[in-house]
Image 1: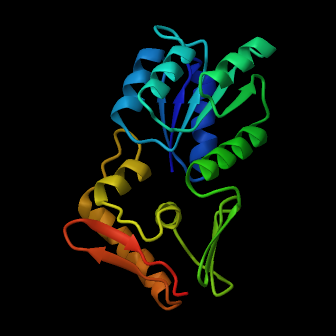
Image 2: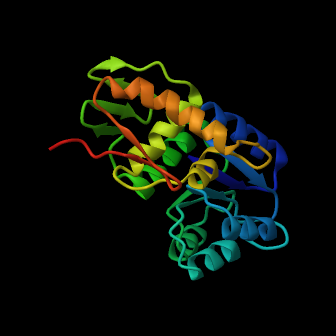
Length: 223
């Protein structure tokens, strides 16, 4: 899962990046509205955390332009502006949630989980796929009730596949959702990650299918 933070306070942004990366997300950061507008137009993200008071272009203008492009990217407004009119305006322009500064980090992380679930896989924190289950809060996967020993990258990869069960996922899409700016991950590396994850799932009857030249697909469980 890949998140963009648009925040002009570098210290706050650094703290958010550290916390969200520790929670298993790939996180990028921009410090002004022009960069935020360009980033969401040119890249795939699973969530935008957006400050209203951005320099060069306001967060509300970024949000307005995002929705004008018919983007359904979940947006969490994070701002010191906490008046009723501010909240109403942000939500009316298409924000999915609104959190005022100062805030508790645990609450922000819970809202991030809720928005990414809403955007991709519904409201439950527990994703199920036949004998496989994945707890999005604890970041723990179980196969036939037994916990799987997965690396952080394998956990993120599994989450992407579970959110797209039965659908083709290309290598480029995996890179887009797994990697931050400046992180070099080759197609060969993606193949290695998928191979390792596949080996840990196949004994439980969960199959990741390779569609040659196109990508991968997590097979729907047998009915």
